[in-house]
Length: 163
Image (cartoon, rainbow, N blue to C red; front, side):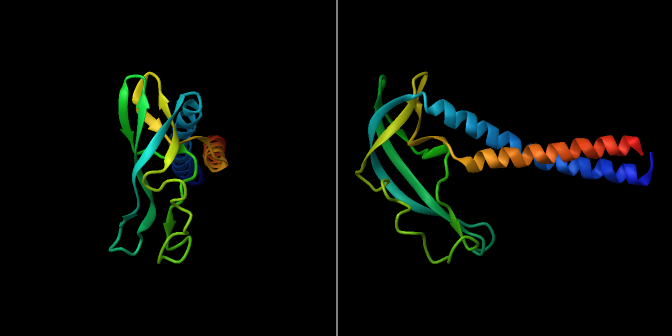
């Protein structure tokens, strides 16, 4: 195999890893989001809601997003949940998406404490619940991006063995 062939294989491996990194977690989220649409719908109540701040590098790369605690009645009793969504966009802000001094005022709209909300819970495991079932197009886009990277990887492998 030539040096160009080896380079193609290295780039193919990188593209494949990146592609799998996009496809696998997003496909799982989409599958769970779609499954949640078929779960049992009930009413619940938000117990607590807040904006969390996750710091990664000395507060320079912090992200901010909503977190909630809600309770709901299932066929086997009362449960509490924290999941907002599997595969729907939840506002997360960082210094790259908007001025870092706060979030838009509507981020917690419909998620404030004592608000009545719809909750979807898994009838086979009532402790699993979500406030926003379904899928946003961004997740499908990420799967398509990963698929494109896997296609590029396959093409590079074919090219490497053709050299």
